[in-house]
Length: 420
Image 1: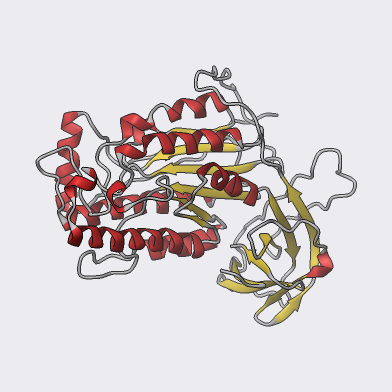
Image 2: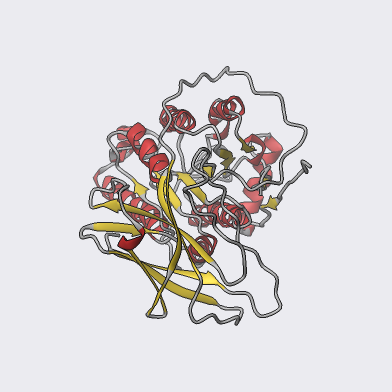
């Protein structure tokens, strides 16, 4: 019997007092909505070693790992990933030194260790989902909505993506680049991929999880409506007398974007997809990730921990590409002098460092200062389309209700491993 399934994750957070006043003013003007996003889904550093962790429920606590569906047409040859509280399944991406996926590894090439003890790999599978090359038309009609959704686990080739458009840190002059990135991303998706599009500052423009490309393409045309209040490389915004280059506002915008990421990661943790990822399209904030005099918060460190525990890598992509200092602010070259230009260069480096730290600490990749944005999009999709599934029973087994660290190694030189 087909059952209707839905999962709800609501992003609800209050910003700093000064930011809240500005936000209410913008809402009064009809230009922005509160940062609340509801998501539903219909189905529930170079190195040869990567450190990860898994959670073991305490004795008596019921938990289930997910049974992975086998690839159609290969059911007799592919392993079935089991269920149980004492079973660990992990997906890892293995690339060469140029970040190109390595696709010819065997089970014997991997070593899993937990607390220094080698573990026996019981199940092994390589999953390949090629990057699609479909045409995309913004006027493509959406499919009729389905009346029911199956309670069967999603296909092992069905991935779950959330595309986050950080309109709090994207300028109006980057409209075309942002739309091109979204269009290329949608074109590269496989038919079974489920995708949601979230605008960090305009939840009313977002699109819930869907496999319907027509609905996804409609969000591309909403980008223009979302832009206008983003912070530039000087930490300045426009649109109201209340908004200027106030450091408190700069901090509040950074914190708001971080809260959006945090709540999306929490919502993805409950998904039954074997591969899920968050693609963060943003120029980045000039605020450091760790507390300083300007902005005393460390919310992003919580995002790192949640993403690693939830197996949700974050891929960051700067839509500006290779940007010049005068292109990173409003007003252009005529609005800056030599000292201000020097500050912009410094802040551009801060933005790139922030985006890189987000990606590295969650198992994703950072794409900043890119000369070819479309190729970067294809690499993100391709990176999530070539990975290995490993399953093992921890030995010795301890039902202690704690997270346990483990590592995955590959006996091949010059490889990079990324996982949760």
